Length: 189
Image 1: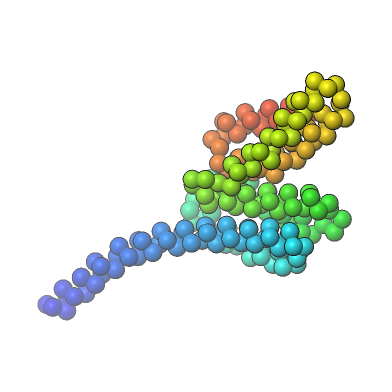
Image 2: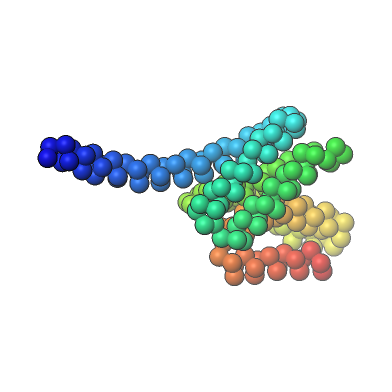
């Protein structure tokens, strides 16, 4: 009888630990994704492209596993895959401008952070980086210098593209679509 009571007590005590462990394991995977994406960015900044490629390649199966286990929204998975492909292109392109390369790696980093961060995603810290070129473009309209306006507008669009996947992941879909349509209008007209 004591044996059965001991087994029952052991199972009962271990069960909450198992549930807690499963939650922590999920959070650990998200932290791992975040760290891997940051490592890809940092290695890219140091021009260690082969090492960054290796980390990026190991990111993919882990992300797919996490997305399947946690039931990530399809739009989030699509944006993460898009960012992954951009990072892959940046690391493979021999003749890519270094600024553009870092923007694509940053885009990947911000998207991975948006997937795993619930409270304060990194893309929100990029507000000044994105909005300053837009404000300068607006100010240049008054000067009637179209070259200056186009320069600042192109700069803004490049910075927006850097955070676009993160916005798509974090914002409600209707807000993102409305914002993105405004940006596409600026880009085309």
